[in-house]
Image (cartoon, rainbow, N blue to C red; front, side, top):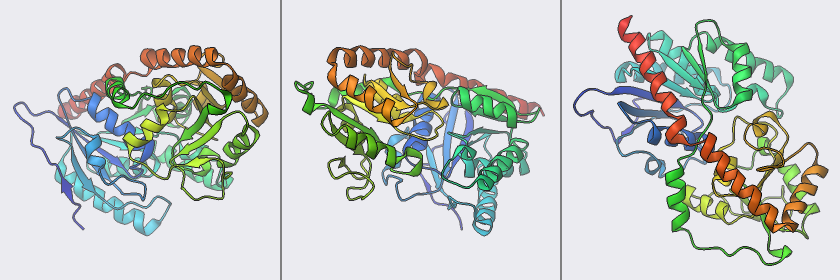
Length: 383
């Protein structure tokens, strides 16, 4: 099957370095990460994207990217499926041979495995960004986690560079990568200019004048990773302290209490608009790479109450930009404290925004990707 192509663009003048991104998880944070990268790393580069489609993939995904990005649809199974995975590998290899990129950039576990081996079979340099290693999952059996870890170890021998999005991911990558795999840590980042422009176009929301008007919530897909049970526990215990929202949760779900407002799946601009209206951002993930939802909330100046896991420690400074809770009781206490103290919310929200500006500005962070692509392309040309 020949993949479909949209928005194909020909380089103008001196040929830019052609980077082909390969992604199965083409939705939510992974989609936002790749779109931000394509916007922020354009100097001397041309981007194309080979992607699968999930139910939550927005139909207008091309609007998130620069106009000259080319898109190629290629079916890939989310779970392990030997027959489908082999077909995806062969289709990917055929497409890469046709596109002849200078660098192949693979995102997330499935595309990371298939893409790196396909690139190696064609003698093309590859980069891999895990966006959270699959073997960190706590919703699967131990033997499955062991299989995921073995797959990561094997694929690391096929790739040229592994880019971690945070400290924990970098430390884990050091244990996996072979001696010929370059390790780089490039923290996830947001396009501040885009986010600020979107914020200015939003309706003005007055700060709450009474405790019952405090708005607490989260944003993203309602999956085991996001621990809906813990979110439901917090929302139930703090029903009197705030109104609760899950932006992106199904409008009808038995997993959350009836008083939690569930928006259903929204467009990115609609989701961000609702995110900006929250007073407290609550992040209950069991595992993560480095959450874009948390970064976006911090960009809007929201204090964060999050689970005390390594990925959250990398972005939430306890007592400064929010709080990290090691138990439901701790998280309940922190949310209640913020709900009762408007001055603390403002102080922590301002600190959260400063942290994003200092450590997670895509205009600065993603220059490292430009340098990495150039380095790999130059090595290939010299070989």
